[in-house]
Length: 478
Image (cartoon, rainbow, N blue to C red; front, side, top):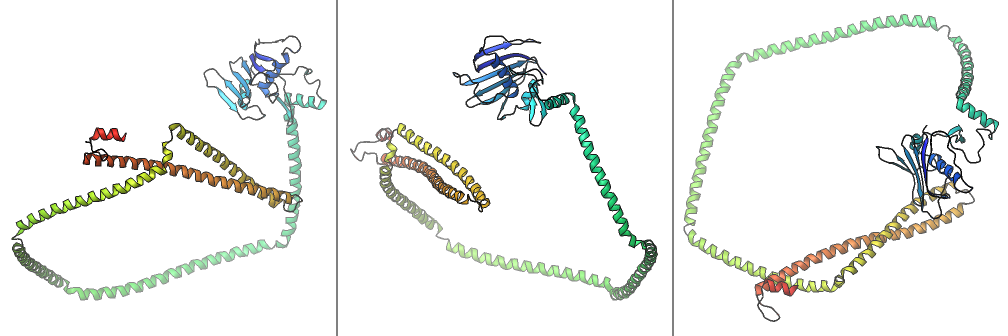
């Protein structure tokens, strides 16, 4: 257990910012009434045991309350509470601060391990804080009942372990005695049941003798089966021997047959070689005739080449004229479309501030719709819970009231579903609008580049007839 070295109270009851150091041994706090002596004890109990709970001890003019205890092992525990935070902070030299939140009404185990000042638990529903007493608490255990005193002394001395052991041993002995009586009854019942089967020993010896004779018969039967298999195998070998002798008689002149086969294969190879050469000669004759025909046809090839070159040039010129005509038609129609788009996108002329304002409005709408979507999901879960409750409450007097609540929840669910659909529609419209604006900007840049190119090609202003160049065109368009 550690000793408290220093305590600091900030915005705790009457203490605005009070620090106090303690020495080892007895420390006495003196002062006038209502000067904050008891508040120091409450602050210490608040850090060590999270008591008292709530925020009533926060100073009226402050927006937070904080109590810091420093122990002799240089570990500091900070208990802090604001309107939005409720936490412990454990500070140790050489280590990062440990922040503990969301611990409820119990003191975190890390805090108990840090100060090592544990409450004495008497039973499941009662514990004593022996290390820090209240102002009006009496001496140790004197104001407690006799049963609480006995439990406390037994808990401190360890006598409760003996009581637990005696109680568990008594239970075990009773259980074993009951099991012994049950087993003895079962033994008597089994003896009565096996009495009609006393002849089984003689029957078992006879059965073993029969089993030995059966095994001998089984071995002899297996030998007989093996002999029959060997007999069939010998018969098959005799048949195979006769077949092999017949084949040997037939194959006595096989060497002469092999020599004749090799001679026939050599003749067949020469035949295929002659056929291949004959085919090659016929192909060469056809190729020669074809070459003669093409030589006669290509006598005027030079003149035809010149004609082809002239035709290709004229064809290319014709294609260029067609492309220019199509470009002129496309630019004319694009100009009309651009004017229409400019009329439809007149809202794009608004100032940057107006655009930002409009986007902020859209963002607020999206945030609101997301909040409504979360509410919709929550109500959907509530709707499922209400349905389950309705099934359990069908036979009760409150079923009609639950049914009406269910109907109202369904109506709210439908309204939130409509709002969710609107949210999806707004998101889609925002995406479509961004895509439309981006596409139109690209088209505007393309139209501007085509217009500059056509003005450069023309070289004259279509309005005043003056000379144009790239610098003048950029000034005019800007």
